[in-house]
Image (cartoon, rainbow, N blue to C red):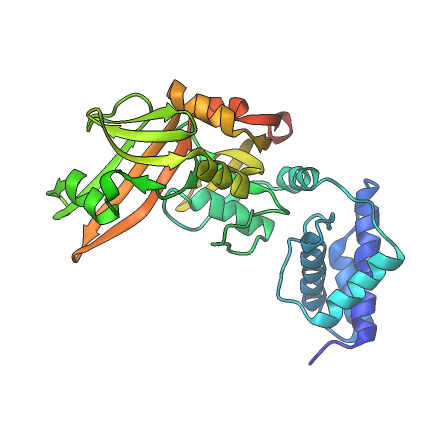
Length: 324
């Protein structure tokens, strides 16, 4: 049964009362709020808890603070959004910088259960814990802030971009056919390697030439990137980025991760990027393979040494003690 305007207004009023109490440092029994609302309107307490999560989602989309312990649930009715926005128009809540909202929510997370597999499992678990919708677009993850979650001190992925140009008018297929080799274990041709300005074992290396980043193999140029294209990639995903370091542990058969530190970075510089490329602190990965006669491109990945992040960005703020 659909929610009436009276029920929605009751939920919205109770939610903002809770938010005000939490913002002033107070604590309250949320379960009791849900029970009282349920008794008043003849609905289950669980339904009001979900409605509160819907309100969190609306505030999240407005880049505004929302209640602790009520991660956003985005499948909400239009009437609810109208009443929430009307409440904000009549009683505005103080704006808070998005990265401070993020810090607050991260600090409220305990051990996070990891349900998936693969290298991206920690980032996925964190986004689920924050109530972030699955996002395959180029938009940033949290209120305009890109989240990069990683365990260990290995290279940090920045973005993936195909080359601006291949040498001698070649295309991706030509490049792959010339430079791939046969993988006996997987019975296919592939090209997997990671290199910087220092050559890898296959002879690939990066070189900065003015506003170009060139890729060489054994001294012969094979492709190049315009600095303008690389800058667009940096700014589209990394104008604001939170690099989140986690550790993990097992409890029975389940895996959990805990946050160790967060580095909030703003304003990456393409000039600094180019200097880091030349210094050997930024890497390009080829992840190409052939399957059933088709070239599979898993990304031309640009990655950076974790200890060079501070050099890339014009501003960085780190928090660690709050997670210990």
